Image 1: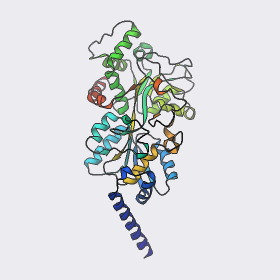
Image 2 (image 1 turned 90 degrees about the horizontal axis):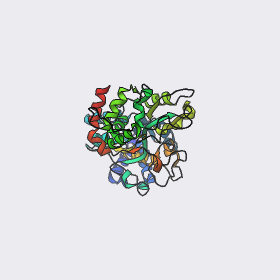
Image 3 (image 1 turned 60 degrees about the vertical axis):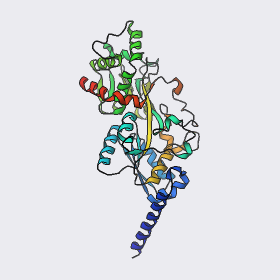
Image 4 (image 1 turned 135 degrees about the vertical axis):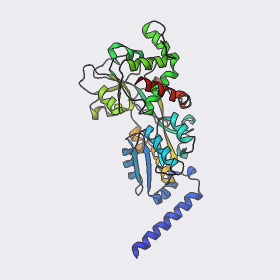
Length: 373
């Protein structure tokens, strides 16, 4: 009888909390105001494109006992497909979405109302407006050319992207299949969008104007030549990192991967370094965004998680931001100093992705890549 009574009281408490939630503007609440509502919910589910969600999970549960964070490491491409399928089925499994591949996210998830924006009030005056809308960017991530600095102590072994099309780099350029991971397709798309720069870089490298030889532009010509030069396509970023960065190699390949993966050099036995001086750019820098699902099952806890992921009041953002305060990730909060071991953002030469422009031709570039495989 006592068990039944306790269960009923718990259900009543949860019902009352839900009523309170429905009656208030959650978006305007502070973390302190959200906390009791989140504790009444008791759980929160996060889809994350990075495995670092595991560290966030432990830190969040330590900071907020009584709330079970269930983090799922799901690539951006898979997240987009899963969330779309769940929405079509009328199912909501995730509360928070942490995802990259913004060009597709804006069209496939935000536009149809599958996800919704949320900016914690605490950080509205600390994050530039460009990183608050249409979705909150927690940090800028990268897909850039990396090399093995143990084997190349004087710097990158190439000084132009066009070097990757030379005979000596045949079969020695590694990247994740762009048709499997959207960030890499965004990279290919940006190369095409920057065709004028690619044409100028070609002329600087070879001393003559580029012959498109049937390609539509210099960016497409580069992609065609890269694939003709036996670029190696692998299944994951870690595969790229191990191939490029592994210690003890005499003549290692180069590859496109995440600059921030340098954080694992010591632990994994890698010697990864960014080829920041490569012309016209080593790759792309793009937003990693946070959003709510349109109707989260745990709306208070969902907002509390996003607030937590934006960092606390300490100089480096505390435990919520710790997994991302590493060289090669650029947090968007202006009151947190850049990581001291990273190339300063002003000196980082990667192209800044404009998601709306990428979205216009992304499918076309995907078709091109498909024909080259």
